[in-house]
Length: 401
Ligand code: PEP
Ligand code: MG
Image 1 (cartoon, rainbow, N blue to C red):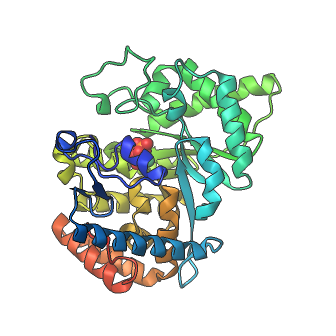
Image 2: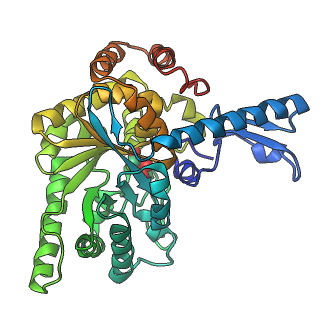
C-alpha cells in the first residue's frame, strides 16, 4: 500500500530495507516459501525467479554493494563543489535511536526530526518530561552539530491510536501539522517547552510543519514567546536565541514564501507534501502513484520561486523532502544558487555528496536554467537522465526513473 513517499516507504528507507510499494494484490500471488527478488532501485518484484534471473540479480546486488562501499571513502570530507560551494548534508530521522548510526554516513547534523513517531508509538499523549528526555538525549548525542526538531505533524497517514476523534473525510487537507498544534495550544506548548528545555543541551532548532501562511507562523511564534516567558519566570534554562524555521510544503506557502521568510530564521522545503498538494496527487494512493512526478515543471518552478525569495530575504533554504536525497536532483538544486543544506535519509548522503563534489556551480546554474525551460515532465525526465548520466557516468548506471 502507499506511494514511495508514504511513511511506510520513508521508514523502510531509513532502516536501509529495499522496498517496493503499491503493487496491487501482491499478497494473493505470493505463497509462503516462494523465492522473491525485490529490486528497490527499479521498482520490480520478481517471484520465483529462474536460475538465470537469480544469478543476474546476485551480480547486480554485489555491484551495488561495492559501489556503496566505495562511496563511504568520502565520509569525513564535506560536500564542496569543484569551485568551493559548500552544502551541509544532514539526516532525516524518525527516532533518536538512529542518531548513533549517522556518523557512518557522514551526516552533519539532523535536518528533520519527525517527532510524531514518539506520539504514534505511545498509548496516550507523551508527557513533557518524556518529550524533554527524548529531545535532550538527541541534542546531547548530536552536539555540536545542529538538530532541527519539527513540531508535531500528526494527521493523514500518521494518526495516533489514542486520537479517535480525528475522523476526517479528507485528512490530507484536514487538521494536520501546525493546524493541529494551533487548535490545541496546550498540546503545542507542552512540546515547545520540552524542545526549549532540550535546547540548553545542544544546538537545537524548531521547525513548524504544514504552514499555509505567515499568519500561522506569527501565531505559533506568539505561543512560543509565551512559553519562553513562563520558563524565564520559573528560571528554567533554555537557549534564548533558538532558531525558528518553517516547512514549505503547501502551494500557498510557496506563493507567499516571501512573507513567511520575514517571520523565520530559515525554511526547509518539504517536497513530499509539496508535490502531493501542487499536483493534487495523494502521496498515499498507489492508483495515482504514476502521477506523483517530482520532476513535473510546476514543481521545478515552485522550487525556483522559493529559492529566489530566500535570496532576497537573505535567509537559509534547505530541502527535507525525498527530492533532496535524490542524486538525480542534486545538480538542479545546486543550480538554484543559494542552497544551504539538504536533509535526507542518511543512506543517501554519500551518493549526493559524490555528485556535489564532482559539480561546478556555473554548470549547475546553466543546467537549472535549461531544465526550467522544458515544458513537459517526460521531456524533463529524459533530459535529467541523459545529462546526469553523461556528467556522472559511474553514478547513474542503474538509476533510471
Ligand atoms: C515532506 O513533506 O517533504 C516532509 C519532509 O515531511 P513528511 O514526509 O514527514 O510529511
Ligand atoms: Mg510533510
